[in-house]
Amino acid sequence: MTRRTRPAMGVLLFFAGMVMLAFYFTFAAVQGDYGVFKRAEVDAEARVLRAELALLEADVARLENLTRRLSDSYLDLDLLDQQARDVLGMIRADEIVIR
Image 1 (tube, rainbow, N blue to C red):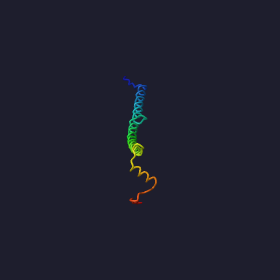
Image 2 (image 1 turned 30 degrees about the horizontal axis):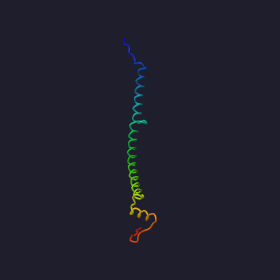
Image 3 (image 1 turned 45 degrees about the horizontal axis):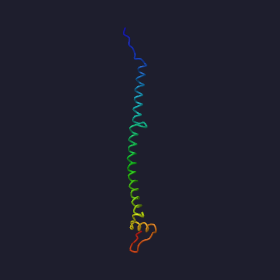
Image 4 (image 1 turned 120 degrees about the horizontal axis):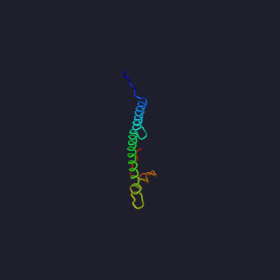
């Protein structure tokens, strides 16, 4: 008389629980708030923001240059003439306006 024994139900439940736990942590590592996909998204956004920062810094440098050229210590007469004519809407006698 040979008797077959079934594996204990507790062992099967333990291994099923461990497999489900492994799947959960794997999913969280890939799709979660701190997962691989979120990291790639944050890196892409950081690249876009760095490019925007470079554009803004160039704009600030240009405006600082214009401000320095109109300051009391360094006066660029050509820039002053251009700005005055733009603000007042005036032209010189030797200029032609094309609309």
